[in-house]
Picture (cartoon, rainbow, N blue to C red):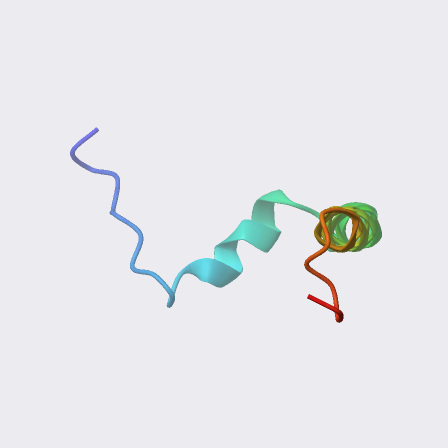
Length: 53
C-alpha cells in the first residue's frame, strides 16, 4: 500500500470522472441533488422558517 500515491485535493478531483461515467450518472446525480434541495426547502417552510419567519 505504500506505493499508492495520496490524492492531492483539489488538483486530483477530476479523477472521480474516470470511475463515475458522466454519460450514465450525471443526470441522476443532478436529479438527486434537486430532490434533496426541494426536500430541505419543504422542511424549512413546514417548520415556519420560510420568508415570514
